[in-house]
Image 1: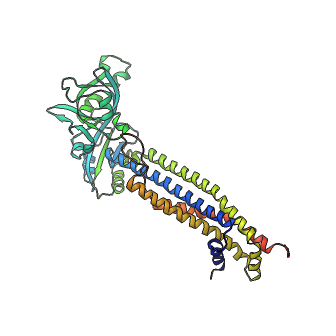
Image 2: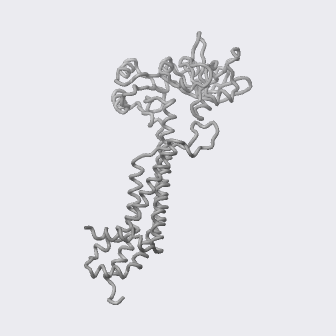
Image 3: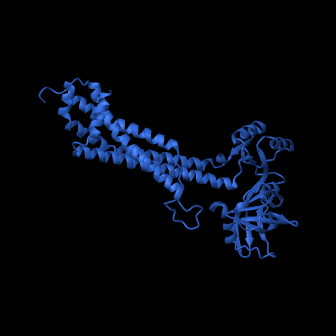
Length: 410
């Protein structure tokens, strides 16, 4: 029999003698439970936000993006393009040309971001489900059209019914500007009509317009050079394996980015924020553990005579130290289990039923996103164990000193 553990269970769970110390122990248990529950829920909300952001990125970002390392225009040879298409898992490859330009329509003008794509983009069905008005096409009868973000569409007052007045796009001719020549010819222009309205997320909706790649090349004058190549993979493919093959094929002069790497800064910021919240909550939990410290200290004082009796019965110094360490562990473990159960229950309820809403009109989601992860429970348990150990050491040492190192008759 583990004598220290047996006596610790009697001290914590005895119902024959309720006391003020018992009340403090229960308060400590509840305090630990509330802190653990709060920590689990907060970490789960951060997981939900990260998962939600990745879900948004998945709607308009490619699985893999190839760009030039020095951020200049990219141009791959037909031989390399053929080798890329032969890599297992590569389903579609889109050449893309992106840049900012000024658009004018009526008396309104706005700086937007154009993205020129070819027919393979539409063949892959990308952003097709995000078309909320109009149709899904970019060219018809030799005329160029654009899929316009809903924010741009509304800001400019565009209309599908006006088939006479196209939207004008203005772009500076960099070759003329290099020669410090500012004339009417220094501005390149092109025109298009809106074919559909896209609703993805706020930043995209307020600045993005998809246009044919040839139209974009005429506007920018890129002479066949591109901003990137975007790859869409088959569902069963391994993106990291494909990424490794592409890096070997293309060399160090090109960057091969997965979807997460395309938004590495944002995802890293979410993880850092989650880490700091975790540390803050751990600090708060450490402050809350003072109730455990006081409960154990008062228990040592209350059980002073009983401890001397146990000493007379043969309880050793090490066993007495273990006894009070076990008392602290039992109180904290009980509170932690209660907190984890409550955190899991509330998190599952929010995830399933969406009890707590965002309170934002026209939001992409109605309730706070949440995602329960096993590692959050593991790290929370580790923090509870560390804090419990630190809070129990001093009272346990005090019990040993009072029992074994006091003069007879004290």
